[in-house]
Image (cartoon, rainbow, N blue to C red; front, side, top):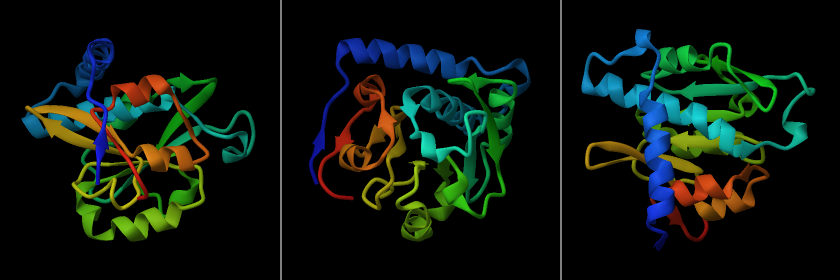
Amino acid sequence: MAFLGTVRRGPALALAALLVLAAAAPAGLRAQTPEELEYQVKAAFLYNFTKFVEWPAEAFANERSPIVLCVAGEDRLGRSLEALVRGETVGGRSLVVDRAAGNYRACHLLFVGQSERERFSQVLDGVQGGDVLTVGEAPGFLEAGGLINFVMEKGKVRFAIHQAAAERSRLKISSKLMRLAINAREGAG
């Protein structure tokens, strides 16, 4: 299992800018605890990921269909995510959060919480072949076939991208986002 890419100076500056944007949560979302702050930052990353991913036209019922963001497992970030995306659009599409999704194939972005660690394979198998950007937060998520995984590095939220899985998907992940990842996993997932 080889990992590629280290953040270089240019992408590091862009990542710093993304982190500043992520931390600029609305006043009503000011963190009370370090865990709340962590999930507010993760919510901001999820919102920003939608700006760097292009879904195929078939992923939507029509040109007015929203981008659906779903949360699988224990919901620690749903309220923060809902507050961040309320009234926002990306590529002319509104953003909606589905915190009680059962059919994850209907999602465009699926956040898989730590509580689902034992079910990674089942959750990911349920969206296989769909146009779902899968984002996790637990060790082993990339190895299970997830596309993006949050990692804590020196007390900061960072993310890694499973490069081979991203290339196999029908999603177009911006090279800018790929360069911002702390690493990308090679090989099958």
